[in-house]
Length: 420
Image 1 (cartoon, helix red, strand yellow):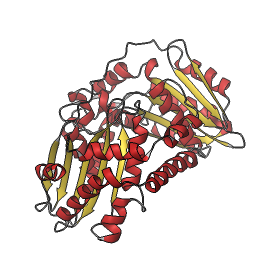
Image 2 (cartoon, rainbow, N blue to C red; image 1 turned 30 degrees about the vertical axis):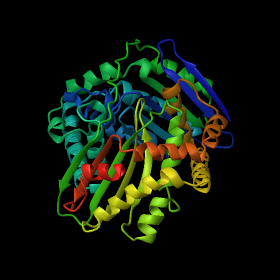
Image 3 (tube, rainbow, N blue to C red; image 1 turned 90 degrees about the vertical axis):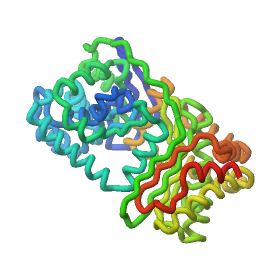
Image 4 (cartoon, one colour; image 1 turned 90 degrees about the horizontal axis):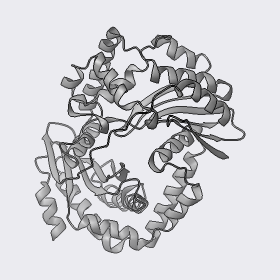
């Protein structure tokens, strides 16, 4: 498999990977701008814009956009994250040109018809309502806001309903003008693709764009805090977050190995101790996520209101214990899980294209798989224990609780436990 890159004179980047033997391809346009790049009064506009891209362009209406891809058996979608907005399609190799034409059309030529804005506004308000009615979704928004208060990184991607209710055509156009610039655009494709043909197509579609000076991101500032919402639900939802490294920091691999060993699967100590041995919950896990300059190691569980205190106590105890007795076998298993997940995922053209775009956005290059595997293999048990030790030292911690949580410990209680 061959990875090839090209940068247009205006800064638009193209990266492709030909995967021999495949008949299909995945192609997408990644914009390195998302919820984090919104001002407070814009909160939710990046996600609104992603929705509106499918509502019509100068040459296609919403139905024609969908039909163009689905008529050839393909699939088209998009997503908004805190640092990225992506528009992508999965098609057969013969239809890559068509996919690029449709994707570039919706990114560059959306018309933002006021009638369609009103329709999609209602759709997004329904999406916000659905999230508010889903405890194990909304608790992570609250945890993010608690960890990064009063800053763009802490705001929800969907935005508050009252803000979304007021967005107009000019808000959408202004965000495009501010952030959909060549230096933020990456076109990535993998599978049955021809690099030179894609470069020519991208040059035709994006070569006319004028380079713009990028706006600096507000630095992340992780803070301790607690967000507690008491409500009559079947379960008490418990989420705990510690600051972790950003994805440009090589220690991200150590943090990921530790969180995998601690709570990343059925063999992890959290799953074994809390669910299998004590039966305190159905769902419990730990995970590490990262942004450009910060990250979160998160623990989540749902349990009964009567048992949430025991669950919190046991979680803290296991974290403190891991700082001293995490074993070589646990770390070796976590490394194997990480490598297998990464390598198995890369059998998919969609995952390949996503990886290429992300790595180009992060490092400006595509590290070889062997380089990433070597970094994972280099992590020792002592390295992983040091992550647990740093968290168990009782530094800054964010806590979110939702449901019948009157018996749940406060953040102060947890900090006292860490200090014991």
